[in-house]
Image 1 (cartoon, rainbow, N blue to C red):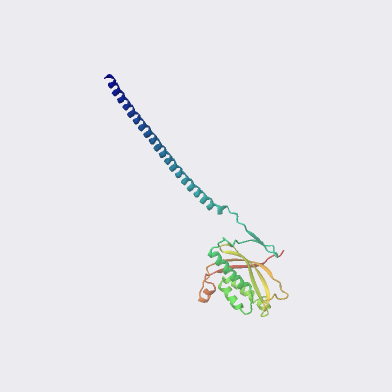
Image 2 (spheres, rainbow, N blue to C red):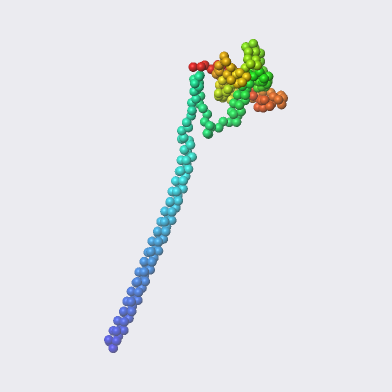
Length: 244
């Protein structure tokens, strides 16, 4: 009987141990699974953090690249060309054609000053009256009076060249010294009726200093066609350019 009780007791103890071992294994595997899940979550969080940092770094690099690119033109060395006139030694800086932008007012001013000077200095028997009318329409009374006296003088082209020769004017440059003053460099050439250089005359270089405003009183449609913006030359001083 005692053996039987012992056997039953041993059997219960064995079953109890197996159950406890089973629970221990279950707890062990659960702990492993929990650990793995914890590690996976940590890895995911780290990956997310690294991704955010990488994106942030990329954005910063892009911003820096854009900033550097926008600053680059400010540090670009712009070459310029100095022109030297071989006959006179006069030097000036040639304008940049790529990016240089003049205001419309400067462009208009240079155009009308060039137009004025050509009509003042050029000579053609067939068009001298139109030239004189243009000079009058673009001049103050004082300046036109000086022109009228010059063109009627015995030494004027009208009385010397007559219908045998003409004077061609070539504008070399127009420099705006102030908003109301400019300096124009030009060449004068005496040509025969075929357009060839006249014998006995050589080309001459000149510089004219012109002061002006835009207050000319335009009264007729004809005057407006010649001088639509009302340019008025207040003083005109031509001087021969010294040849070196």
